[in-house]
Amino acid sequence: LDLYHSNSHPDNDADTVQMIKMVTEQNDRLNKMVKTLLDMSELQTVGRDDEIILDALVDEVLEDLEPLAEGKNIRLIGKCKDITMVGSDILIYRLVYNLVENAIKYNHSGGQVTVSADRKENHVYLSVEDTGAGIPEELKERVFEPFFRVDKSRSRELGGVGLGLALVREIVRVHDGSITVKSNPSGGTIFEVVF
Image (tube, rainbow, N blue to C red):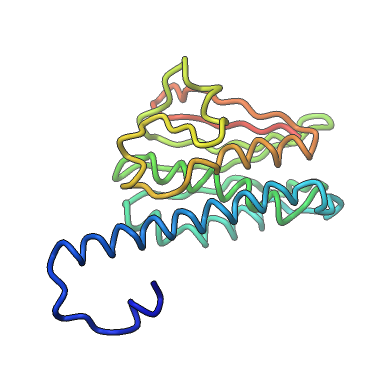
């Protein structure tokens, strides 16, 4: 596909152009799926003894996802002052990234995504809250299943492969944590992780 895209093809008809576009999209999805599956298979081998400064990590994630948020006119907010934890900085970055990316994708234009962290006793509470359409109560536990989508009709439009939240759950598990999904009283969804 890279070879095809590196050359000009002015004689292609609309059907051929559409087919090449579809094959390219499917190739990209397959590459993402393989990468995510490889990431999941390596979870047990990654060290989990880094001291993580959550406000810096969250700021990095929000900065990395700012172009996606701007494209949908979504405001990103981080509220994680002076919270540290021990774990794998690579995996916790991926966890926060996946949760925020989903919160952006499934939000509406003009919406908001807030990432906050707090320490209570010996636990760190990390939450990602959005103002999107929310998740029906009966589907809240299923969102962590590999390849499950709440709205299958939007899967091509939103991209991804349906493994992001499955990976999040595994990252939480290898850090001896828990994750819950709640409805946001003002609309949307809250994912709360406890370490």
